[in-house]
Length: 157
Length: 157
DNA sequence: TATTGTTATACTCTATAACTATA
DNA sequence: TATAGTTATAGAGTATAACAATA
Image 1 (cartoon, chains in turn red, brown, cyan, orange):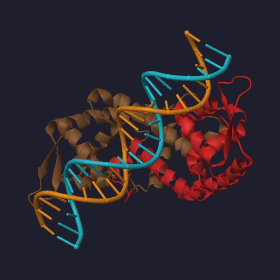
Image 2 (tube, each protein chain N blue to C red; image 1 turned 60 degrees about the horizontal axis):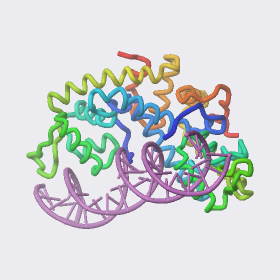
Image 3 (cartoon, chains in turn cyan, yellow, blue, brown; image 1 turned 120 degrees about the vertical axis):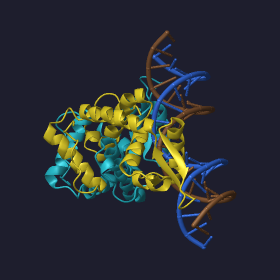
């Protein structure tokens, strides 16, 4: 997308326009700041999900991330190529691939998460801390996120 | 994208995840509610921009919308095919295509805008009016929208 | 020389269908 | 029969490069 000067009124009152461009800006910033770590935001999210649940099959991980199982294949291929995750057949059900973080993957996750949080803090900098928190909470409600889990917005741990 | 059950904590605290999925949901809702009118949200935005400025060349319109000029070609092709806009060569600068709404286009714009506003109101329904307004204002600041122009959020005209 | 519209082309992200190996 | 992973393929949406007409 081409994002240049500020939009005019007709557009800045449209939720679609606002969400799209906010998303695009964040994605760009995310890519730029994570690039030195050799991953993008999508891959980082995979690592984070694998870390917080362990023992996930590809399909289970895909479900949590809201991505298709066919998309998951390429994602895991890429992460495995970077030696950040490993696949192994589940002994209980040999149809399943258990995906696990490698030691390198766990380290990469830790480092990249620091960068991500700092990037989000920069991104939200135009807002007051209270407004940033409200934005995140509002988005969580719109997306249907679970209750609780609200920290991190203006809390650059 | 596959969007099913609510995400878990690791994801719902990520701005990237939240913006992406909020955007996807809105886009889906938008497509669904505008479908009977034969256009999508992107085309509607083009009509709105043409209506509020008149006498725009393709490049100027593309600039306001934040899309590439090559993308604009196909967009105008589609709208012209539906008889919602017309192209004509600018007499002042024959390199330029002036894009204008047809009478049908103006009517379609009016009808579709009603539908869009109602769709956005539904989309924001999980939030209080105050929170909805704050969300829109926060997004405007993040996207770098001009000051003022804040109505419509929880003000279903 | 520079700009506008256009075309051709390619790349990313995603989804659908069909195959395989397991269950 | 059904499920997990995979592959092939196709469709959006977008960008880059190159060309024609015009300035």
